[in-house]
Image (cartoon, rainbow, N blue to C red; front, side):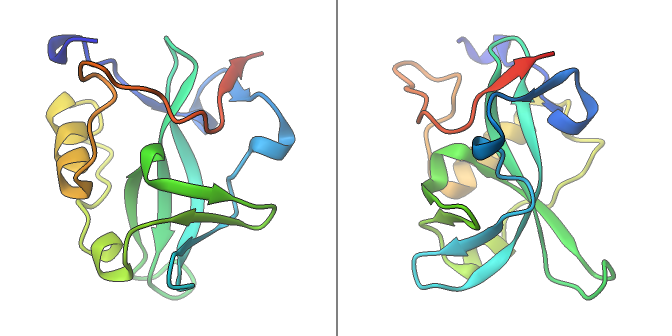
Length: 141
């Protein structure tokens, strides 16, 4: 997929799509890094509706009772393991906390996705030779 063809992604909760299997739906699961630190929870999934693939986890972290909470995207490529209760990633707490903040006004700007991938030092899904990691897929109802 060429850089000028980066699709507009949408939250799965605001689309007519769903995760293919209840077992694969990671929303609500705790996000944990390799050191065992709980970093937040998966609040939603950002999907490429055209290809029916999850591209980012929308992770909610910090704050108390929603006050001061920060939301950031983590590319699905950062996921190293998924269990019944957790989604494991290879990044540190500091790296996740310092990630570009989620801004609903920016998600339709393709450069935003590039900044998130650059921040995590991962190849973007629209780059040459990209291979989808095989994590949760979505399907249309």
